Length: 475
Image (spheres, rainbow, N blue to C red):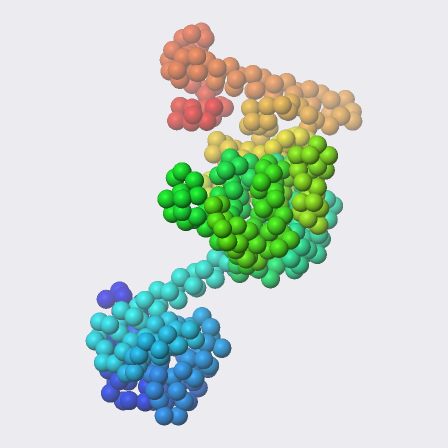
């Protein structure tokens, strides 16, 4: 019953000059819950299809006015993603193959059974659903990686965005320089999403994560028997991503053998799989990234000079987070919204003091460290505001007093001294409690006894600093 209700929203257009076939299709598909629209010739079918009628179209190959092949061609020109099923009493292999080449989803020979027709329509709709979902995900991805949606208002990032917009619509090789965690892959995806290859694959590989032998096989594929364990032929990412974009992260780690193959790909658009004897032609956009000084590697003969110049056609330098401090509040707030939604928690924001701590911290792990820090805070914090005391254990190299501004008068000095004293006491008390609990395997009674506290007083302090036994793994 539910399936019938769902199917009522789906229209099937049947184009056939034989009333017996039209009526049979209507009877079978109506019983399945579909809305069925009939057209008794090719011209009427085209008129209805041009109006957007039909989620799936059934068309007879042999009709007197306009042939099914012509109808198929016209529909595919205007609605290339719409599934068309060919009905034919002339079910020769040639006619079926020709229809499939023109874009038909499949064909059904006359006479057909109700089950045969229902099954093929169902399969066509399943494929359409998958393609629609793919389109939706692609649009989401496109929006996410559009330059205007990448977070950053600093001058350094504005320059990065300008360069991305300049190079995206070309096929030039791009080399992205930046420290670990600065978002090099995000920029590579932004270039791909705004290029003419946006509908093709984007594949990324970390060149430092695999041994030279494995990396060569991953990149270029191998033929059966190329080495021990090569029990079958396997395509590499260059073949899989043909017509798309390949992102090679940590390019400085590739071996001299891979460097030579990569150079040939850039210059000749061809390569040879591991153990293969024939060249394969490809068309890919290559984007690379490094956190090393490749010019220095060239001077030391670690990296080929000719490959360096081929990769470095269009360099983009990503600034570290410590050099784009004005972006930190934007990023921190973005990650806070992301993780509070994901973890279903209510945290409204950061106190001014906490945000100043974030801004003044040097972030050696860059954006990745900031993201991980905010995620941890969302998991552990129970307040509606993230305060400085929550950061002291996370930003270990940063004193919680660095956010303090110099007081202007006696009153401000007195208030600030009191504030510093209270914060120092709070920090000390919390560390005292946590250490006592850890030393006593998180047994509250034993921790209180060992430290000379009444259990109720010890528990009161735990509540004050929101220390829960259920959260002990977080400390």
